Image 1 (cartoon, helix red, strand yellow):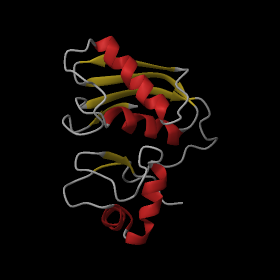
Image 2 (cartoon, rainbow, N blue to C red):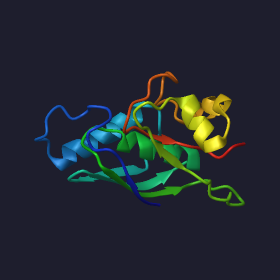
Image 3 (cartoon, helix red, strand yellow):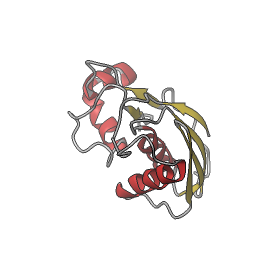
Image 4 (cartoon, rainbow, N blue to C red):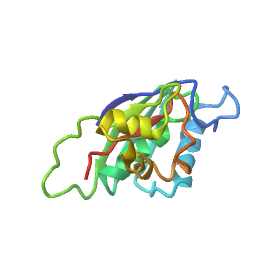
Length: 153
């Protein structure tokens, strides 16, 4: 739980105009999250200017992280305030990963990021798999996009 920062002028363009009311934006964000196959029945979304507030519950920690980056990787959103509770937490809480999120910089590609965070460029597929279905191709990332970086298995 907490506040995660994103690049405001990067991401999916789901708001067709800047003049949408905050409830309309919240509905569009919830629909955008649902489009990737996440169960949003227990998730509530609020928008306050450039901040998304996620509340409710979700099934797993991995899906929580994916929902957060899906909501934050939207043009016009600069922060996600995460208040999601995991319904089925692991019996023993895993130690927090060294790096949980990564903001893509110009010139980055997944194997370069894997080399930086894991010390092995060949582990790029771990990052790719952790960010599906948001990522459809490991070569299609963009500066400002925030990715989930899972701990090594």
